[in-house]
Length: 132
Image (tube, rainbow, N blue to C red):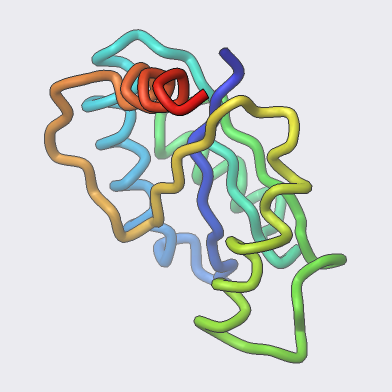
């Protein structure tokens, strides 16, 4: 299966502002990807405002190489701000960007997975097969 963990993230001027995201990534690695030995990409959607230097910083500090940063500025609705724009992206636009994945799991930067007792993608696949 071709799966991914996805999130919509903000760009910042100060790299330390990504600490919450990096903590999320380290916990995902510890409690999901490494624990269940699944090498899936972490896909980060952003408004085109995360520099290559900041992307490298996030990768390095997260200790995970399978990361992709996707600039969504062409589809991001600049006329609508904040929560509504995020909801619109997750309802409509995300599917164009994720069409090559079988399953995605959205984990926001403020969601810190402390414990996981089952590979979440195995569970997602089981549920998917049960509803076909």
